Length: 331
Image (cartoon, rainbow, N blue to C red; front, top):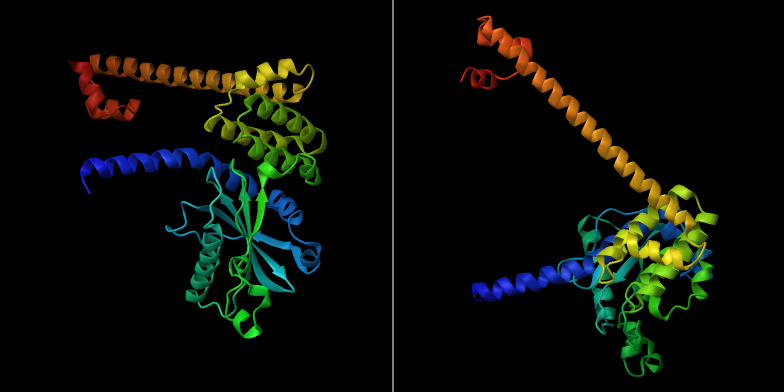
């Protein structure tokens, strides 16, 4: 491959990363919070499984099972949980492509096999159940199978002998674009806010995204802890600003004005943050001024001591200036 072609490939890869990273980073940040992930998982796991699953044991697992061969397909987040007092893994996978991928079922299968392989290498005697939930917020409709058995003609009519030799691999799919807003009402307000932003951030209507964000944030402020909502609000604003929507505080403020009374809490938080930023800048300026004043004072003392004929090494000890700085005063 030529240097030019190699350079172009690197540039394209960088551009792809710049597009997907806001989705990946935000997904991991918000779903990496146990209480948020717990609510999301509870609403997407069948009751018969929840009845034997102890969500009180749910803990985030370090590391990832997404290798280089899958990193263009998924960002993953792993939680350990007990099912019938046995270890299981719930893996939240962000499908970050802008359109559905028919190979996702094979990628999920490979993901599970990679996880089991790694655990086996770590001398794990028993393999955990892995429950993969693919969270998709691309634009296109998902028309592909989520169960590998559905790709085999006549599978369910095969003799048990053959069925037993065909691996059963499937994944749950949470498709944000096809999830009506009413369906999102089942989540607690802070999670509903997060999911609505993920749903609308890849759609064309920027005005709708701003309105949804403002109304969902206001609702969350009324029902959740203010500190938590304020934190998540900041993360989502950063997320929206880094996508192709390029949402800014000015755009948000203009939309709040249009909604007449909605979004006042958001405006207050933003104004408080701006004020804290100004105060921090003033404090930093004062500190710098003091430092400069102290430094200037040391130089004046050094000059006076030099005029009295004091040795340089003694002036160094007296002022804390370097020998080089004092010698400069002699020139």
